[in-house]
Amino acid sequence: MTEAGSPLRRVLVVADPLHTFVTYKDSTYAMMRELARRGVALAACEPAHLQWRSGEPVTALVREVTLTDDAHDWFHVRRQGREPLHAFDAVLMRKDPPFDAEYFYATHLLQQAQREGARVFNDPAALRDHPEKLAVMAFAEWAPPTLVTRSAEAIRAFHAEHRDIILKPLDGMGGRGIFRVGADGMNLGAVIETLTQHGHTTIMVQRYLPQIADGDKRILVIGGEPVPYALARIPQGGEVRGNLAAGGRGEARPLSERDWAIARALGPVLAARGLLLVGLDVIGDWVTEINVTSPTCFQEITQQTGYDVAARFVDALEAAVRAGAAASADGRTGAAT
Image 1 (spheres, rainbow, N blue to C red):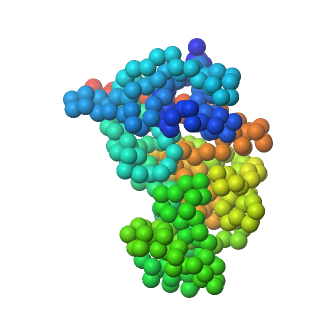
Image 2: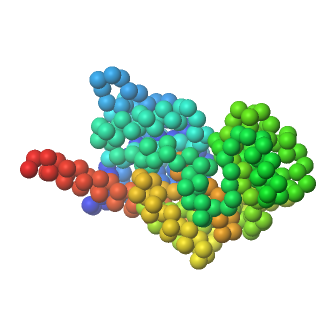
Image 3: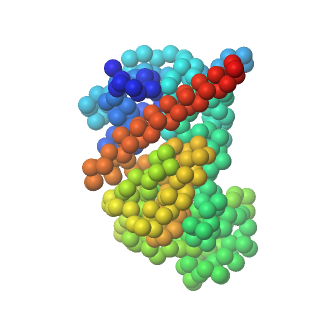
């Protein structure tokens, strides 16, 4: 039985294949576990399972699953079949990057499902409008000097100005493809050629922030409000990358005054754009990325602090679904009067 008063009975999770989840650290798994604890029926599919046939609603080949207590064999499939997305109380889009053409097309199918009555989180149009590297450019006052270009000349000029820079692909994740070039400019030409594919691919360049030694902080913002703890991902072994996937060590910390200021400035703006869950990456006093596709670090923060991030997220999801249902009801009432 679902908890009394909850608007959630069935939730569909659109994500990578379930068998690839690493359950002790996966945030999508933490969401699913909390939903199951509240008695919500769970189903899952991959973006490849979405389908839209002319004259029909958007559907997906979904697997209804139950969770087990086994860390490896962690789910059982009860039933499989094709269903319209609007048959679920909420659809969670949790596919990991890269944001490639197939991800882009999936957001269009999800947006059509919205028109048919599905409630999708994060909002598909907002996912398209906020590429994770580029989104920070709209908040320049909170970000370090940043350049987005495919021009080798512009990158060389940026390096001449700032002397120590970070270069990274726009579609990267987990720290992959990130390079640092110091004041001596060693290998700058080779890095530019590699990342821009000789001027055919746009990349991001930022001033290097030495505060990375103290950690690249992931601040989670849920429903426009920050979680009070960040996970500082601290580089190890001479690395410049703090990403956990690149070997960084995760250390949960209370938000600093500057962290609160950043989160409270950006959070309401992003929530108003349809982003229920956002992960802000902060180095020192500056936001370097805004993660919207599948922000993570739920379990690390909860394990180290006792703050239940997944419960906070599901509370916000319930509130968003309830608000959406009320708005739909008001629209129907208004149309009838």
